[in-house]
Image 1 (spheres, each protein chain N blue to C red):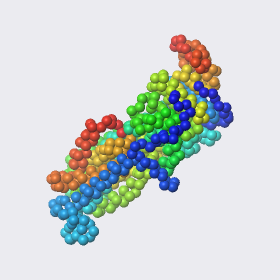
Image 2: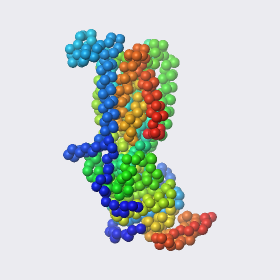
Image 3: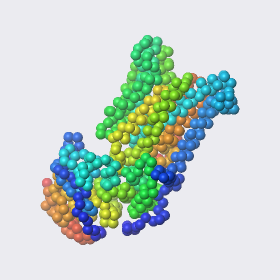
Image 4: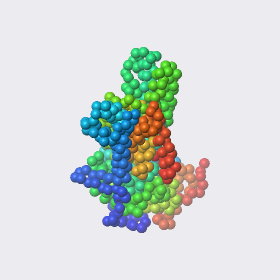
Length: 365
Length: 270
């Protein structure tokens, strides 16, 4: 004991490098510049990739013409291509990436397990089962069945929500145990996969082909009809997700410590998981299960920001950048028909491996 | 060891004929306990006697199946978690910090019950964290990740967090587990200072009877879910109690340093 009864020295440094306290009236907080920089860089990347993407494709349009079209001064053909074909596709891509990035960060933090992502937990698989059922049963073979009638996006949404609720109910034992949740999620994933396989074996070849494209995750032929509902969903879910951030920082400590610090654990965890499920469902309904985004992006974000947990907003923006960038590549460099989901997996997984090999960080969250 | 400041005898925390159970397995039966303001109590007993379970119930982590726990005269189960967390701090056994979390951030988390969505880092928060870091000698390590610290330093960081929480009551579940003897002493000295200099009411679950007798002013001995003895260490720590509760034949001699009772084991009975 060197400092019996020591008073706090005037110069005790509480703030760490790259951190600034901000206080305005009753509002106070800490700004972590690394998080701000990563989020801003990701946002800039989304805008740049989106701008390039607007001009690229089978019918290239110069940047000047793209900008002219955006302010309403373009030719009719260009206006149609930019505003009706490409813009909604890019907007859907960005919003889907945003939703998946945030959902992944929420799942991984609340379960305290980096494996907890909608891909592993079976939620996107549930969406696939719903969508494939709608395509196969409602397609050439099924005629006008009920499932076929509700449309593929709605069937996917329902599939994701039902799986998510099942996950929550089955994993629930006076709160959520992350490890148990991952195991149950894997079981649900297997059920969903079996269902998809069974449906595909029964399907006509055309239906099977379109179902297969859907379950890879694609932005082809997305219109404002997909973008607008997604935007509305995000307008509700994103603030809800960000509002849980402060508490999530404490939930991460484990149940007893979190409750000791005054967290109402049960309602908090239930809310976080429900928001994450809803974000996933909305994203998957719009573009199919674009794989690896929700799993990889938060892990990339955590390493870029060097914090103890994936930052929500930065994860979302990095997700958006990944999806928009991957879509741009599939439409320019790679063969036209390649769905974006193939590329997010092919780019995302090696990037995570690189970070894992390079970083000092262990594989835990 | 520091002298005890005279305290009022107000009961801060009390268990009233509580039965504690995990699912159907009853762990603690019909237990009464009163903890007065400014007291320093150690709960001792053999493995599986229910001492950690009792501590969890006192900290509102476990709801009694019968009876109740009162915090300042009010049923703790009907007091909002956040309100409890401003009066009562709790350090679980071997708490885990997320990888990469720095000591400064860990201690700052202790302010959670005092913060709100708008007020996330007030001047009070900053001052409390600075004081806690300085007081526990952790200021120089504030930038270091908790997972890179030694066991003793890590436990200090957690105690620093509990200090920043600014609660009158502090419950610690085996804070010396996995520490070598000199770090056990270091941690207990820190807790004793929290009690003596900062007026904290302390309840600590301890395995080591000699350290419990040296630091705590009151021992609560438990056996098989029941409270078997309670009082000053000199009264509780008897050769008969060690035989009954720990199945241990032992001599009790005065601690040559502190004068408190010290257990010298002879052999295991039965």
